[in-house]
Image (cartoon, rainbow, N blue to C red; front, side, top):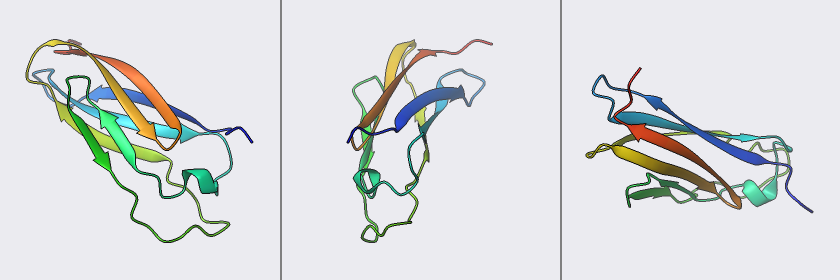
Length: 104
């Protein structure tokens, strides 16, 4: 059965120098208690060769237990440029473009 879930990612500027961003990702759609998305590791790609991940450490799946749906990660870029930040959670993935420094 094909997943009805979709991942989305975006970046919010966090510092006046325009080089620090909060990456936010959401899992939208589908049921809350999907076993395929339960206790999955996740990976953030910052677009500059740096990845940070979290492995799933949780209780065994039980029907009716909700999957996590919102995630955050802060990244600071050392060099101005355009970066493709990514989010992966199980079989889901999303990408966003970040231009640093960010200018309002």
